[in-house]
Length: 302
Ligand code: GLN
Image (cartoon, rainbow, N blue to C red):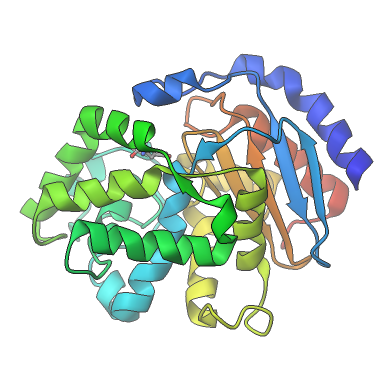
């Protein structure tokens, strides 16, 4: 396994030069465009590392999976899906267009920004601080405390520049998809995106999602099932279909260049970081690493 991972990282390192790091969040522009690293935790819980594994990065959209899980715990199935749809999107992750043209006036799904902002709005608590603390603790409980931190600089950077998300938030309230104080919901959303980890933390999160209810008694089987399903159908934004064909496992990417991938058949968790992105906002080398790994290890769920 170690040799396989090293070979796949070496093979794909040059691909990083074909992508670009996200710059619309100014702090992310400082990421190392050449970096590429992976952590894989196998079915027995053995951890393998290859490439640049000492870098830390923010979860960004990977956090959407956990916000959804906590919202489902808080509000139940109907409480979430009365307000947020279940359909994949053919548009960019931060697109606003379907909010007005899609007849139900609900965001399409919880894995894109509009749906995630509406999901985050459903997390219970008496203040932003309390709501964030609940989500932060939930993620820490899944990944292990020591792997999870908070990146104040990324949070402030996105909060200062997040006008598109602000536009989405106010639009969502106008059409009744969220209630309450939009700035508070956005603050919570920017905070969740700024939770920081490393590839070991990311692979740990991924593996916990891969385990069944017997091995994972703290997480409700129904919530786990729904999270994995959304990762499979919507986790890579408008490149999810292609990812399903080429890789074939539930995954969620973030604009930091992180991809959290879960192989349920093998009970395996994989965390990849390579900050240079393709034009859809997915890690350009990270996707290829997972495609090669999936072929080599027969990970695809079909
Ligand atoms: N914080 C980012 C945003 O809202 C998350 C998007 C992403 O990772 N695709 O734009």
